[in-house]
Length: 354
Ligand code: IPM
Ligand code: MG
Image 1 (tube, rainbow, N blue to C red):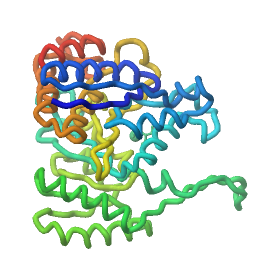
Image 2 (cartoon, helix red, strand yellow):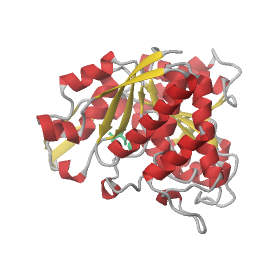
Image 3 (cartoon, helix red, strand yellow):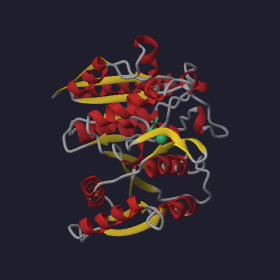
Image 4 (spheres, rainbow, N blue to C red):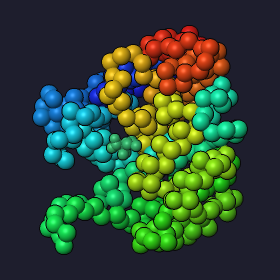
């Protein structure tokens, strides 16, 4: 029996719909298992810009810092495309991650048996990987600006990784691999980038502390190819912020749809940020079409990692799997002969299975 204070950031686009699905699931888990989840809402992203003229007001951020953990939908939308960089909705997401010190972003991509035919890869099976993306360093947070250069105005973004930043994300990856199949693939571009030189050296130094884990290095271009060729060869994939952003979207398609991929952004404390890896999908927002599974599974990761409620997390995962096994499909997973459910109906189905 516990009481947990969750800050919810619905955000923009489909964010409010998918977070409301996950909140319904958490409420049901609370009722079934005797926990109390208190929900506090925080306005961030485009929604905050519309209301306050800035994407991450101090009060919204404070609510995240004061909570036991944060559940986020998505931020962004085309109406914000022309805003100055500092006002863009994405600044809120990067700002929350940075302020909370969430250096490790775990993005599991597992193929559900029921979705083998939805997966675009022929003969796909045994796909079960975990992308461990460094989240608060690298090129997304390096020095950046616009200046006059030889070819006119030029934009620049500096990619930089320090040894301690690499060390902590690698340790996270090795420790996760020990609880899985014991293999880590470190992705870099060491044939070109100095950043990757340091990255690779640190990964190998740290590896000495984890002799039971197998380590391989793969260059990022080859990795993109390998993920499509045979994703079943990978267990834990550890990489920097930029490569992790790109490869995790790719990994999502290896298992059918980006609509089912959750994520946990964590550090060495129990407070984290849990969010689907998909974006705000503005073209389908407000239509009850979006797949709530990624956010529901993110809530499950919160139960497990933030609140140490593994049994409850497993119950949620099972409820999702049963819904898929019983033929429940949202539009992104549509299959001939199976009715397409809306966001709310998919959530109802999952709730019934809990
Ligand atoms: C993600 C998203 C974000 C990122 C954007 C919205 C800033 O693409 O979570 O993968 O790049 O981290
Ligand atoms: Mg992304």
